[in-house]
Length: 287
Image (cartoon, rainbow, N blue to C red; front, side, top):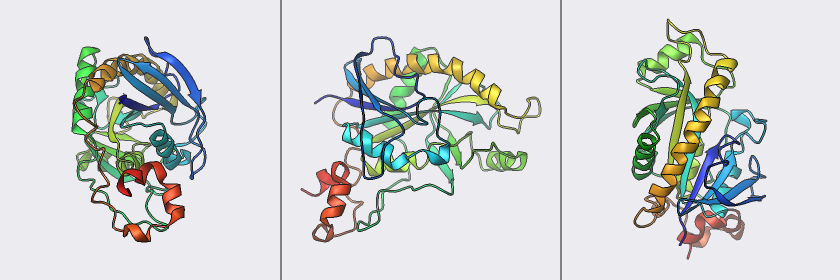
């Protein structure tokens, strides 16, 4: 069976060197359309499926991203490994703009997002103490080193609602919590990926020092965009190496069975409507 790697990130990421068999597929889901069409291709012995998180042209605010539709569509596409590429602000002096950060923990400060596939006839509670896949983070760390990128292999990611950047008081609070970076998109994405039995990791790139650093001006859109452009080329290189490493993984993705003990609703009580709505997500557990 093919290894299928999903990548959520900027719309330029599917222009990878060596990517073949490109095709665009429009998906529909019970939660509406995803952010954009999904771009399928092949690289390094794996199938890759790309989704621009904010839509092409960056049309969607972090709050407006249809997270459930995105993950559901990726599940329909057969994705087992999901890499989330994102821009973050650094909350630590040693994490410099341009550095890669592989967050291993999250703090959820979002307020206006639908964050679960459960509900409306299905009760479930996923284990989320370790929200990322250790194996996938290890492959990404190795890929970063192969690409010559400076990588921080762990760190706490604060996910804020946005769209405004932090106040200085908020930035200092997050630093006091021990957080390493701050962004606007990792949640509920990571939770939904776990509910969809995907092995998930965040490949974050620092673009700025938020607003806490006394020797740097407060973050501006121009600053973020400038560093983002240089990070796109770095991310493409890393993803090329990562695809080869993931394709050589022995066995299924580590979180392929994440719902085995998470579903509390009796199978006999799960309605046909729920089964249809969550078909690709529930199918392995309802046989």
